Image (cartoon, rainbow, N blue to C red; front, side, top):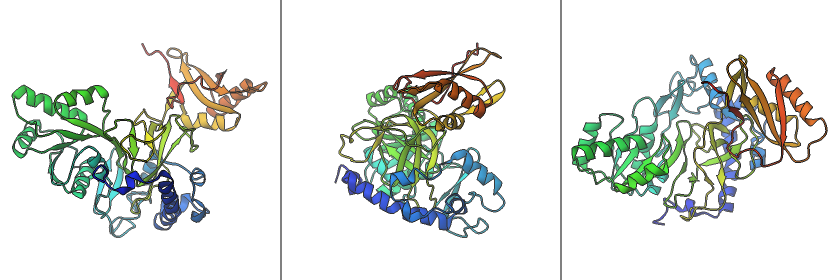
Length: 420
């Protein structure tokens, strides 16, 4: 057990899936009863029937821009747009919220009363941090929830926290020198700034020998750079809406999913799960009763990895952040979105993956719809071209390809135009 935060991490995968699917109907019932948004979205849906991934995949995906639009429409009556089961007097729900945060948009997120509300302790533990140690937290403590996420997770683990926040490099270095924390949490770029500045000025901060990093890409080169300076850095993937989604382990082979979420990978612009290993949009259902987001589209691309983590953790793994799923391009003055490509392909079930490629120079745009199909029927290309024109109001050439011809990168719209 010393290797894991708790026994959940080493569960038999079948038992974990059974537990998640058993909890799902209750969470959907609670979301319908406790939030106006899901009462509307799931009207007519029998919560008890949603007890499998196949049934879950039939529910609508709520994407961030939809959540934002609903919040904007309801600012005067409900700051959370009807998605939160908690709040304060004057915000529909009269109690339950401990804090409220503002992310770019602005989108407002509630924080409830539960210890380790964002479930970050698991990731902090996986980064090597243990009870009794001091954690230097350089995530922001204002507006956005990152600082609170990490602090509540560290407290749940039994650690003390120095709330460094962002900026003030010299003061933060002074605190590290005098307090001698064992761990750092924050962005990888700011940790590099601290280490560079310490080396430049001769300040001793070698007490920091482990770090949990997030908020930015953490490249292998930077990981090795940190290791050469005595810091073992690990990354986690979390969002302001969901909290922890996945985290890195000592195996350094992908990110292991958190125990409190159900994750799907869907084709961008749709709610349709992709085959195992294919890149798509990461969609998350959380079991958090306070903010019960069901099939929340993160807008981020990822893919499931085969097998289990060599660390012994038995949950599924993802490859980490692979780009953005909310793709669009402006062609001849009109926007084309990934959802439109999905609508075209929905009419042709015999076809596989598709990619709309936009090429040409200024004022000479041309679109090519590349479609994988095993056995193309006569006239399929012409039918696809007609559907593309009907959906996008633009003309597109169609190129039929053998299955596996398109790159597995989750890209549905590729803007290959020259802007020189």
